[in-house]
Image 1 (cartoon, rainbow, N blue to C red):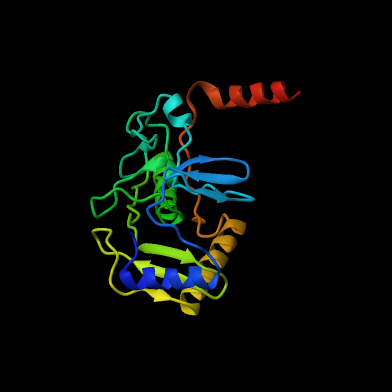
Image 2: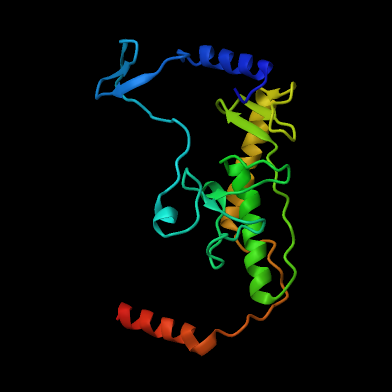
Length: 221
């Protein structure tokens, strides 16, 4: 439903090419070892069933007493700071973030990148007493990989609705591959882009940091 009519046709063709049978408007009642039972009584034989029904959030935030939504996502402000626990920051799928368009950011890696940068900027800014810059919080579109030579890049508007045009085929696959390569590079170079200038941190009151280190060393011993 998040794709334009053209992108949906492209996805249909890809499923046909890959030998994937699509069953629409079919509800699953139970998953057993060798079959899937549907609510209409149909039994689908299955050697392996992969359950990919949406996203879920770990219950650790709710169990820890943080303010969360009804789905368990941590409620944060514009800087990714928990509205109930100021010393806690959240980013990625665990955070309930309102984007620059006034709508909640969807749970995705694209959203996680922006929220992660904003959380990092906020933590560094508050620890060093510097102004906290605003990282853009937007969701540009959906990117679906359909193999090394095929993909769908569906852009969305400010209302999170699919635009009429989309990018498909090898061009979209190359864009997807580029994003993955960039992600791998940044993961292996975690200090890239950090400021070279040193900013002093405020001292920890009552020497609690030294006590924590001493306790950790004693525990390790």
